[in-house]
Length: 146
Image (tube, rainbow, N blue to C red; front, top):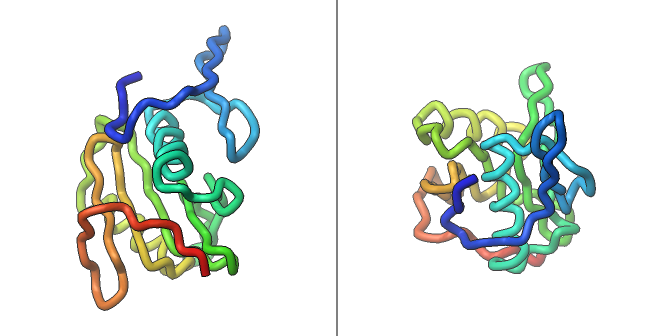
């Protein structure tokens, strides 16, 4: 796997006859190491190690209901009151961050109503503040504490 632009982290990767697996510190289990999962795990470690997000306030791959359909978000950060405030949509490094990807996270946000939306493929990152429209941010927001 290539290095995601956020830094290098120590991962527990296991090669098996069924493929490679990476230990997810949030789900506390090995998951298939797909190109998208590689990006997702790097983002999780970046949020915890670099931005000081509490791993207890992060959720990965949880189901949400949108127009009667169950979808899964990649990563959501909550504040200490349990309110979601940052949602991350991860794509594999070879996937272009197109308007379609932005639309996907905007649709997911109809269910969660978070303030910050971040789309990433590891190499490209677009983080938006949804308060008063959609404003592109220069950096990933710090964790909210209340």
